[in-house]
Image (tube, rainbow, N blue to C red):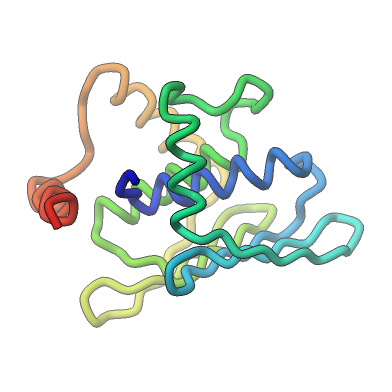
Length: 161
């Protein structure tokens, strides 16, 4: 099984949500890292609330299925929920921030997490996430990485065991 970073786990949850429901029908989304998975609660615009749990092992299996195609399935528009969650996850991974909760609001994303022993809170505006995503897609096509040497060393040590 592949080792998934936060960005991969969040992207897959976004794909799963988008596969079930049109993004325009989803109101607030609340993602909490919980044990060996992600708990996702979301409210539809009509007021119906839904809660799901996605174990990391299930997310990894689904990710392996999509591994051959780096981009979201063709039915997904650019800057959809999956891409936004992936972009935020990449930013958190690069800074060594452990996600505790991510809440999607109409105007952006509220993230809380920890780095070391310190709690942090971040706000990502919807437009800001779109710009970050656009920059990262350009960097991926040019082979450039945003990750520091320290983050790359941490990832390598996790892969080895």
